[in-house]
Image 1 (spheres, rainbow over the protein chains, first blue to last red):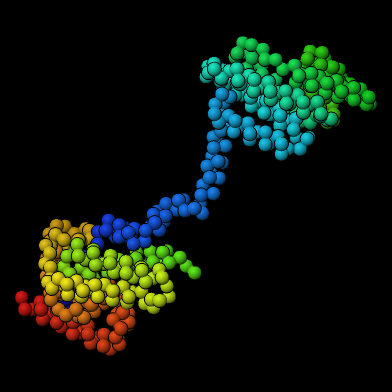
Image 2 (image 1 turned 45 degrees about the horizontal axis):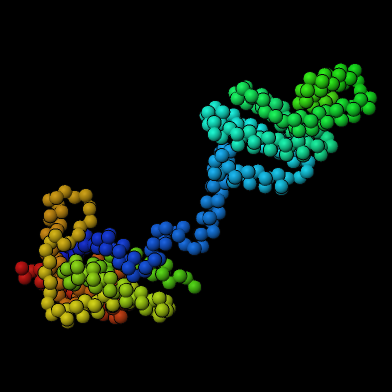
Length: 227
Length: 167
């Protein structure tokens, strides 16, 4: 055997190697918890705060699909109340109306799934939210596009839900608040110099007011104001 | 200052297979090699965690600790353990069974004769040809001059060659 052949045979001994199980178990035995924390870095205390925060964000995210009568629904309400609390006075009416629309969408879902036991709490939730919207509308000095759009959407949603449930949902406070706004806006326009076309529009708005179709009246008023 | 556990984890990952093989080729037993190699790392870790700066050359420290443990083992037992071929683990190199059997036979042959030569000769051959340490590194690890290391390696190969030719 030449020296080169001998060296080649020596190098064959590189095939000798320890078992993976022994390598890992020995590492764990010598270095203790360090190996475990490397395998599961989120168990490190430094990640605990982040883990809790992500958990809460996830929980709030899931709660957005919750329906009245479900345990996570309170989290959804907390999120919405925080949004209203943090918004400006000018934003509050349209935000309240958007939330009233959400309540109607929840009612619609419940009605379609035929979850009878959730109907009463869902109607209560809608009436409470729309009552909040009425309060904030009573403080409105000038209607804007967002309020009008949400009011129109609320009419459509309410009509659909009432048809599904075959029952009327009481929302007098809300319509009274809208009527006050429409009347005020009409009298403001009457005091102005209007073109013939604008006068025709105003007459149309008055007719909507008589028919108690306040959202249509507001759309017409907004069109005149924006000309 | 770097985390000692993290630092030592890197050391462990880099040297565990080398130190295991270094010990295994001297004791010829998987169980004893596992026992002595883990003891070598445990002792090194005990020193390392107290003061990471205390060990100048971690590689040399590990080989020296492992070598001392092997010497102690033979002093205590006063015997050489011969193990069956099945205890030799082969990496899956993709060769067929015939090739594996041939390699296994070669491994047994060279392993047997390697364990018959002097401890210093075993060390220099394992470090240079199996652990791929260049001569200056082997010299540092064995605490010898490069010239002395080259001479030692030459003698080690000659001794191993003579052992294989005696068969």
